[in-house]
Amino acid sequence: MFIKRIVLLFFLGICTFIAVVIGCLQETETPTRQKIDLDESLMWSRFFLPKTNLVYECLSSFDEKTCQNHLPTADEVKRQFPNPCGYATGMEDCAILGGTVLAGLVDKYNAQQKHFDRTSANARKILDGLDTLVQPDGFVARGLCPEDKKSFYINSSIDQYTHLVHGMWKFYNSPMSNSADKKKIANALTRISERLIRNVKKENDYCSLRADGKPCALRISRFTFEKPHAAARQAMIYGATWQATGDKKYYDLYRNLIYDAIKVSEEIKITGWTPIWAMLQMQFSLETLRDLEQDQALKKRIIDLMQKVADLSNTQSKRVAKKFENSELETLYGDWRNPPEWRDQMGYSIPKLGKSREVWRAIRETGELPLIASHAPYNFPNEILAIYKNALEKVDPTRCASCGIIFHWATYWSLQANKKGVIE
Image (cartoon, rainbow, N blue to C red; front, side, top):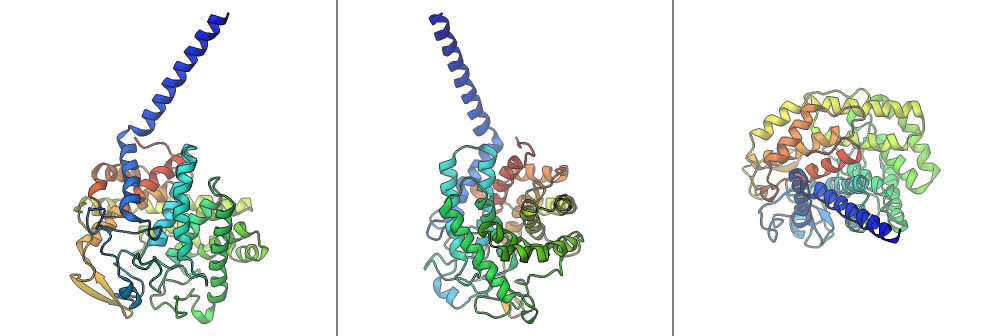
């Protein structure tokens, strides 16, 4: 009897060892997973700067020591050169990218249920960076200058607010966040909500205002119901703040907006101006509202709307695929200080970088489009899946200057977390 038990335990031990080995091979050795892991590794070594705990958007070289040398100096930011948004400088989307990465890390943990310490530590770095972007008065800076770790451009946008809040909200609801993280998120969301309460009024053209208290000339910091893709943003922020703080004030603000927000959002359609990034932000705001909403009938409308957003985005598949196929994928980001041309936009001087900016966007859209679809509740469009697979195959992450590889990485984990299947 004793010998039989020893043999049985030995046999079970061998089986367990084989299962672990097979699991590890399945997890790490598929070509797609190797590419995704490489995307993440390069995200940390090239796009993320420990000085600020922020993720920046492009590379001006493939040398990790110099790839972010193009970023504005403290003096340039102080002079608001080249424009108050920091457009084209590589410092304009840190809030967007940080929010995307934080959400992606939550999805990664939810999909695997492993590597808790490592993933939560990385998430905490991103949270700390995002928290520094939220100023004491609730203004969400686009990014911080690495030279002095504090200078920023004074013109933000609802895009920055949306991604930052979405990432914080996802991490708040993750088992990876501890009480200190939740307190930090609650404080940041409170600062943001109080800013919107103060500033988003008719007399300010419903603008959240620039850091200097002036209206945004480009009108990109307005929280209104005018455009369906942006109609749910303010409700999303108040709802997330309510959940994080438990303060009924923010719940009441949320409830005052949510029905009209969804009604207007349901009018979404593709027009001559419907960028992929706008649809992604809409999807993220809807994901937040879907999980917050307690009215089951309204929740069902939000879920259906998320499928509609994915289906409408799918109508842009041919355009995205064509742009990607016509791009020289290894193009480095251009010199924004000496661009081929300048464009004046409402008094803001915008460097136009031509091909390099087009390639940067083309690669990014092949990640944004499937990230939208990964949140679709009913079906993942085959056309979008084909674009994603093609981009993963053709983009060499070691020779890619676009933050698009970050969206490729985020999509992979979103697909798994949302049970859309593993891309092999």
